[in-house]
Amino acid sequence: TSINETQTLENNRQHRTKPHKSTANLGDLWAQIVNSTKSSNQKMLSHASLIGLDRELNLAVLAVEPKYVAKFQKNLTHLSRIITHCLKQQQPIKVIIEVKQ
Image (cartoon, rainbow, N blue to C red):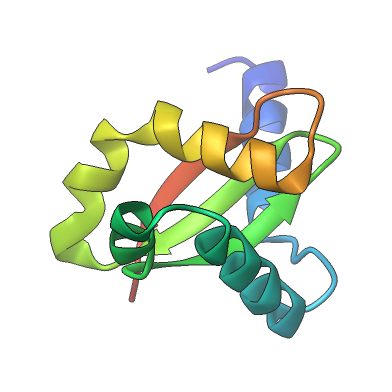
């Protein structure tokens, strides 16, 4: 990896862990997102939590229960649409999935 790639990776890592205000606000925001979808989506989204959000970079980080990670990864485009629509973002939100510890 080049120095620029390493810096980009490091910047992305910092943004992923940078909270959107506070964890409580992220929890409230996630609850709004979950409640804004139909019940079948709500059931799936209940297995995740929003742990990072950067509206400038259009990036959301979700912590997902281990047994649901594959399902979430398979539905990244749909998740992006749900989050983008709820947050009224102009650009699509990129969703990053992390395994909930």
